[in-house]
Amino acid sequence: MVRLYDTRSRRVEEVLPSPGRALRMHTCGPAVHHRPRLGDLRPHLLADLIRRAAERHGARVVVCRSVADIGDPGRDRDAARRHEEAFGADMEALNIRPCEFAPRATESVDLAIELIAGLIEKGHAYRAADGSVFFDAASFPSYGEISGNRLDRLRPGHRGEAAEPAKRFHADWALWRRSDGGEVWDSPWGSGLPAPNVVCTAMALRHLGGRVDVRVGGIESCFPYHEDERAQSNAATGHEAVGHWVHSGRLRFAGYDTDGPGERPPALAEVSAAGLDPLAVRLALMEHRYRREVTLTWDVLRAADETLRRWRARVAEWAESPSRPMSTGHAARVRAAFDDDLDTPLALRVLRELERDESASPGARFETFIDADFLLALDLSRDIGKTSPPLPPGAAELLDRRARARDARDWTAADRLRDELAALGVRVADTPGGQVAASVRDRP
Image (tube, rainbow, N blue to C red; front, side, top):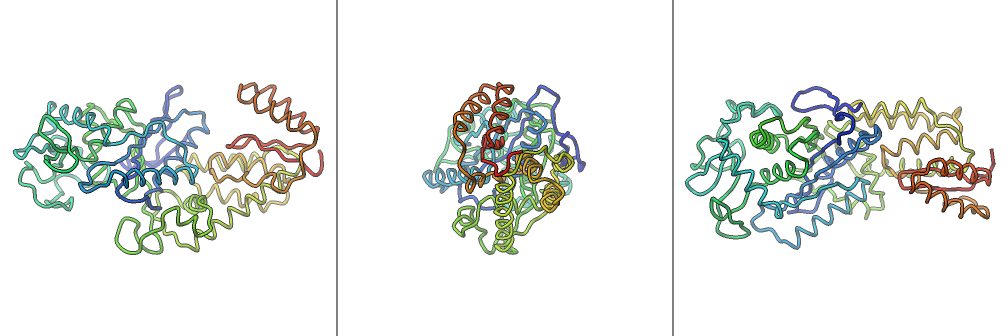
């Protein structure tokens, strides 16, 4: 069971689908008009933690991460692609699993046009005199259930836009805007371009089959973006299209909001340039519950980097000791913490407790940390073997045979070869990155 806080219901709810069905998750990818910053990355870390917790329970996860590369009239195509590539590099550096679908808005305008046409036909949208198309907010009475911003409380200009006489109601929002210049597309309503949120809606519905189990985003997107998205999705499908709305808290850096004015927060590449491991950012964020507002500083990131390096050194040291069964109590508490609304601070405290527990054998601590790293994704096995004695003769061949057996899912052969390696004095650990071997100093 994996339970998460649903922003719409204001309750912690179970999110795993019924057995045999994949967990379908949607998150917005990069807004490619600027290089991704740390604040842009936090929702994607949340999505990755959800994915890993679900996969720990054997669930298959399908993620659609849409790329919002539309809506910026002066955008530079080459710069947009560079920003998208930088985002992909950041995802890899943070050990965020690749998504199954990564559609671009500019390549999905036809889906948006189809969606808008359907909304007009169903009476949820209308064409204005200037050729724009607006969503009829009054046609969706439950608007505001996610954020609490109900239609009867909204006042003109709540979106920060200038007055638009073409609207029937001030709370309506644009689905298509008429334009004759810049990057435009043809549509039944004339040349123009779709609003980014309607393209995002169309891409998610197409690639995830009309229903989304978990919609992930930053809390700053809750209103009006996600309220609009819910209205569009439900109006188009005739049902509640998203099962759960899950939001990460705001991220500030050195006292400045990452989405507001003030000091520009660093990009992940700048963290690396400062000599820090990018995964120190992942660890620093996991020290807090995902729903909380977090303030990062360079000192916080340096402390996380020190913890990361210490744990890798300890894991490499423990790897040279005889294998012992995992500390099941600690491992169970780590998993339970993840299942309980992603309580990553508690999971990290459990590992720190085990690290200090001298009554636990090095082998048991090793197995437990490696098991936890499936969820944490901190590359804790990275330093294994860097200072270990060379492997004995014949070990390399056995390791190669065992790797082929695992690829063939022949677990019986893999276990037998592991025992043969242990008899040679070689410790084998199955990590998220594959099997890792090291000679032990003292054979069991």
